[in-house]
Image 1 (tube, helix red, strand yellow):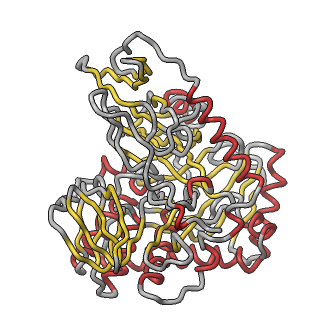
Image 2: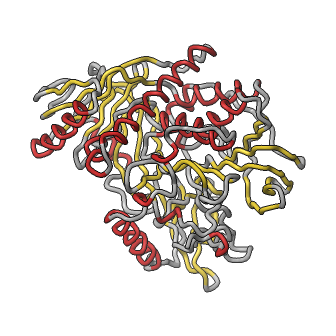
Image 3: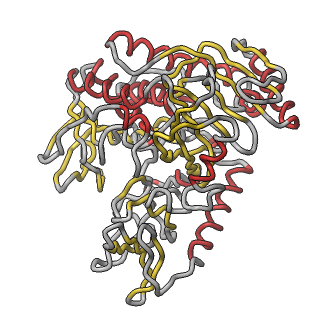
Length: 508
């Protein structure tokens, strides 16, 4: 995967060891993004015995690949929450995110973290006159919930739009710099941190769980999955309660005056804008992982040039997020009857504030403390399951599975820089040819549930169209829910992930 703007602008500061010895610990945190790091920070504040395990390097995933927005304005959300729940829950969601933003600001100030934090406003906007009514509904929801805001009539600044809805006193920051600094603070507070230490198996023991990491064991009383997706599912089928979106992101220098607000369109063509210094961050081109893109990267860059005079593209990358059907994250117990396995997922592209909410909430579970946000974010809430979108998206997965099986294979090897599916020795493989004319051949079946992977030409990855697992062209895992790498031609064929089904833990 390519480096993001944040990774390029920061000198690499994480250099944590690889776990190589058997360890006993009270709490094991799996995942070194903002959620895992924030959880580690608060556990350090409580002087808990904990370790953090990251499969790659800290903030390598979505935490270091977003646009750096810190906001309670999460698209057309609040009118929907009022309609499907009530004003109390909608206001509580706003307050949870407001508390998270203020907590992040307090941490930055207390520890003097240099991460380009600044207060600013956020704006939803539309270019389509038909969408104005929806924006007005959201405006009314803001008024009902006493959210500070301003409604903007038709304007040409910074580009033509029909209407805008500004939420006041939000913020922006460098998420990668913040995450790396926060990890160091957690380490100084007593949390052991390990990079390049993937958890490949988890088994229940008499008094906790045994985790397999780099061929050695960790014995933990409590396990917290901060992996964007809980790869240990145990028959709860959380992968059916979410879907995986990817979007393209670019950073650019432009001749135009930069927008003062963080901006997000509500139109069919999603456009997101933020700034860092003299750099414009532009995101959009949303598509489901492993499925057809609306635009390739060059076409997406061209949409930016419709509004701005681009001098230079400094970075281009993709970000991946899990979406829930009711627009509320899943934070809490993996199993309602089990207090020792916790997870957080389904951030709906708003992970910067949600990671702080999750860090605090996961700690409240682990330390047996109360929290007013437990019920709202409970993974066991029925609203996350029974909905029209639940049916629609899972039919999409079925369709993607069947369509993936219909991908044609070829007998021709790919050109340099390309990947293709080939029939070799009566089995289908993914074949990539690098710039040195070397071939990389991997089993093309996703080890999660057996979907046929698709080649992502922009990222040079093999992506799953069903549940969003991603692999490098060499077969290494980039993103779960898959827990196994792709086998090569000289190894046994990929097998289905053993953590998906566990009949003993299925809810009845």
